[in-house]
Image (cartoon, rainbow, N blue to C red; front, side, top):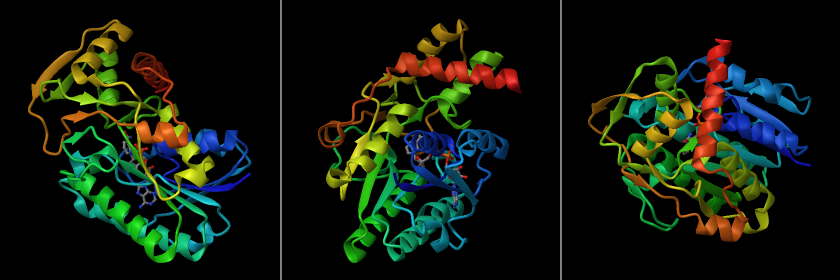
Length: 315
Ligand SMILES: NC(=O)c1ccc[n+]([C@@H]2O[C@H](COP(=O)([O-])OP(=O)(O)OC[C@H]3O[C@@H](n4cnc5c(N)ncnc54)[C@H](O)[C@@H]3O)[C@@H](O)[C@H]2O)c1
């Protein structure tokens, strides 16, 4: 069994990943700074699962400033999930994005190099491709939001550490992740809340933008596969998507059907930095990692609706 560091363990995906690793019998060292991008109480709730395990140790530390060598020491693998996500605020708060995503990654890489960590898995995003994200991993990268630019800079930092210091790196580019615990700023979370509470949903753009959504358990499985198949994933970059493409208009219809309610839609122009089409080309992950997404969009959305309903009841 391995000792795994999960940064961003209190976040949406990091908390699911921590739980899955614990379930497989690994020791998990979690790190998170509770960056107030969204409410701390939501992140504290995300952590209740991992914290119920005696194999979980938590460090409330900020990657930008904390002493990291003692955290990284003795870890076999680092899953670097922590970042400032979401593109909208990256236009107005670039300092936070560049420091968390670039400086934070640089400091973690330094600690990983010094501790001779045997595998560093960097979590990247389809946003590094730009307005359209439809091709394989060697498609030219033209991010067009400050968020995408900061994530690509961090990918490049990883590659620089790999080349200069032989730090073993795998890069995973996630495509629009959804499911229970999805961040409250993300479109499906806002849309479902609007439907359940009878509030208006602001649709940016014409709704024909498409997404290659990834259900969170598929994304976590792919991430663990990259770790377990270290012999073939090392040095590689992999797109991780859900295998099904839907437009926002189709998602609205599906959610109306699942909730039995009519969405109240208000129209607004597309936002700067919004991707138009994403369609994850996951051939490489399929062939090399043996990854195969299991959850169709309707089933995944049902799970998210059920979770959001239960959160409303608990509130
Ligand atoms: N959610 C998606 O659809 C999606 C898509 C593509 C890529 N990603 C990537 O996946 C990762 C996880 O995203 P998420 O949606 O779970 O986001 P999240 O905001 O829920 O989780 C990220 C966590 O990282 C922590 N963090 C941020 N900066 C930190 C710092 N300086 N020090 C310590 N902790 C810090 C935050 O407090 C937060 O809990 C990110 O790297 C993101 O770029 C997410």
